[in-house]
Image 1 (cartoon, rainbow, N blue to C red):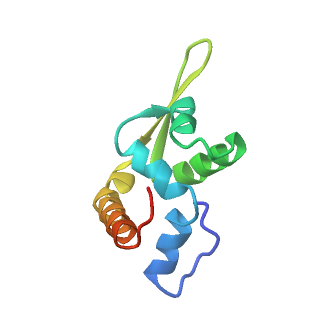
Image 2 (image 1 turned 60 degrees about the horizontal axis):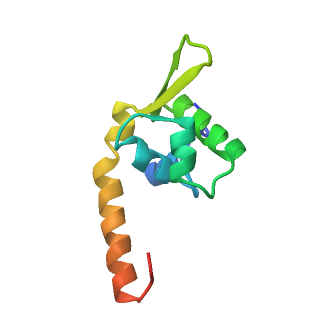
Length: 111
């Protein structure tokens, strides 16, 4: 596991350690829509660097939120998918998306 501590003061702290930050929820959102290759994720999130995407994917795999499948081909083919834990967050992610849309509409923010 990549989370930084072995003890947390509350479950929200652990949750934020696992999926917090700028990228992880976005990556998970797209992987919950279906299996993707690295280049597909990069295309869907163009403002993430390759280095950061690689780091985030490794952390999420280590934490059991996604799975990585490597095919024995030349050139190598790697696919990423949501694990059962990752998929269990989909309802929460959808509610957050709805909340964000409502907030944007009420505050005249373009999405």
